[in-house]
Length: 395
Ligand SMILES: Cc1ncc(COP(=O)(O)O)c(C=O)c1O
Image (tube, rainbow, N blue to C red):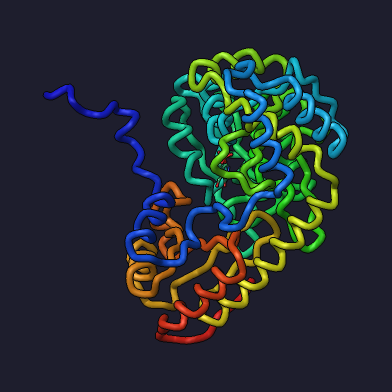
């Protein structure tokens, strides 16, 4: 057999459907409500800081685990917001986005055969992350309309082989915000089975209707067994900068830093400098970010309902999960392709968020991290859409 083939690992997962939708959208000149990146500018103060850093010749490798000033800013902000003391030298590792932070963490702590609990629907990277790190995933379903989990089903997923659980709150794709009570149930299981919580909190500031973001690391007994992952991408609208980080217990930091070093060496040095400025903006910035996204959420909810989608109202992050069964298509992929080619709006087929494609067959995810004009253009295009049995529902 030829050796000119991909590895077994690489053949176990497909190309990202989300990024494929973005490419299809470019081909058809559609409105891209698939991949979650803003089409509006980043804050001027953050952009100016990046330009100033380059002009000041911050052009060489930063310390591999992150420039001191950025690690200090990350530790300071986590402590200030959540009352958890973080030691920058021992606990913070700056990576190339939350994406690398998650991959480095999993490769650093997982041995082949270790089980990892993952809630589904999940952010599509977690599947390949599990395969690449050798983890055996155990999926626990978040069930609509509120995307809650059954505590017994969760308890059944834990055993002696469980090494970690991956959490994402506020959640992509569902918009769920895990409550303190739910996190308490998860924490108790982590403590009982000596499991690490890996918590992706990249949408921490994008939260609605008075909901509160609770980092699992702030729960009793959890700081010592939680790796919190975050990034500049979403909070400051700089998804292309690729600056993220982990906050880990000192017992895990060394392993994460080694993996990170050999994967990427480090994140872009001048953009780390800009990250220090970003993390120093006044709290009013975060209030405005949340308010602006809540307004965009309500705008897109109104549009989708008018065009007969059944919507699950998100409490955080910037996506709306919808049910498309009323449109009479065979499955989500067929509908998503029709939508981008014939209607001119790109969205993500629900099956990309489930291990078993059938579970996502009636779902489609739209993002609303877009200018009003973009959302209103989607509204005009969706008018082409016809539905056999008109009538939408909101949960
Ligand atoms: C839940 C979640 N984690 C991580 C990422 C990627 O983050 P980054 O751009 O920092 O790599 C995304 C991007 O959509 C996301 O939705």
